[in-house]
Length: 76
Image (cartoon, rainbow, N blue to C red; front, side, top):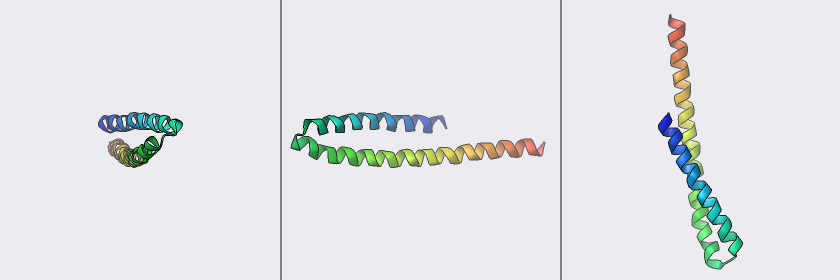
């Protein structure tokens, strides 16, 4: 599970950078920067989907661990 948490944190850190870049580009109001925002926002959207998937996997792993512990204590 630690690996998944590290992956989530890595994606969230990348998203923070992307959001800063989008904000800077938006404030500049330059056409080229606005065009760049399209791909930045697409990457951000993809990263959000990754985080959702990673959290879903973490939830499944956590549920499995809890179920195993419950079964182990119940069987004793």
